[in-house]
Length: 502
Image (cartoon, rainbow, N blue to C red; front, side):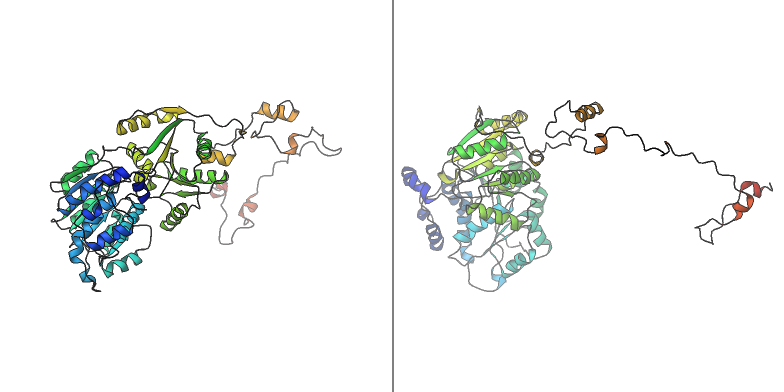
């Protein structure tokens, strides 16, 4: 599913669909309009209606819109239209140089943009390719050498291809920085500056993001020429179709809260966001023990593992996808009913992107955030960002379900594992005498010698070993004799008295 609205969403709001402008009113090539119609889309979203005419006019654009509103199509369709004059059926790579470059912060977002571009260009002669890290470069190199007009890439892997001279960017006419704020958050600014230095000075640059920070505005001032601000919602606004709930709980009860809400709300699937890669792996194993089909998605997974986990989740073979913020952007799953913030995000902007995975394209969704005492400052930052007061709700766990003591592996999953305390000496005595009940998890002596009474030694057996008599002093001849076990080439040390004539 793309970021443009689904036909079901359009049909659900006929008044809005009637008021929204249609794609066939745009000056687009018939092949592009045919691809849009094949995808089942008729009317444009607000960001598309505002941005597409500006991009077609050749202006630089700063596009601000919340996730799931169709930003990808807002820059893909007009760029394809402007490149239609270069479309040709030649097999020569020289006739298919890179003319449009789209930079994305994550592999998932790069793949999503590439799917959009290829879908809208399917009836034209324009070629598109995507390159990202974590996979072998050889297939990417072969595709680039055959020639592509649109290149979608993550910054790190693109620099690899530039250094290997397999990506030539001297004919680029259009540049798109998608989710630019995320690229700055994860430290891609030096890579962006290096890449932009390889591009021609005369180009059209588009910057799209769901959030705008002072750093983003500074980046835009450096690389955009008199940009037009296209904004269809407040910066950092959350979708009105997403029901946001904040529950006050403890770290020990978080997993039980997720299970209970899944059961009460009858949620078939959900994404559970955590703040660390290790925490994602441990939590996924814990949910597996609870009987839920779970997959983990984080940066330490190979690209093949990430694609398989995502494909299984989209196919409905997985109940829960436990993920880090690597999945907060660019992950587009149709009809995702719920998102859980198992950990409150470190950065308030990531909250907007996390909950943007549900309630997409007009559909309804649920976003649950589990809040502990330690999260008060982070919740305050989220309130400032979304300009909305957060109401913390208590939640009672089902009383009819027995609460069992956590297994050691459960404590490890929460990062609370610690070694068992060794009993004190007086506790050993009380345990051995049976005066103290043994509690689960308490170490008890298992050596049988501690449980046996004292037994005297058998008759005739000496009470103690005899002390050996002191050995006599060695004579001068013994000192001169070679020591047994030493090599004959090693001379023994001589006594100091013999050296002095004594």
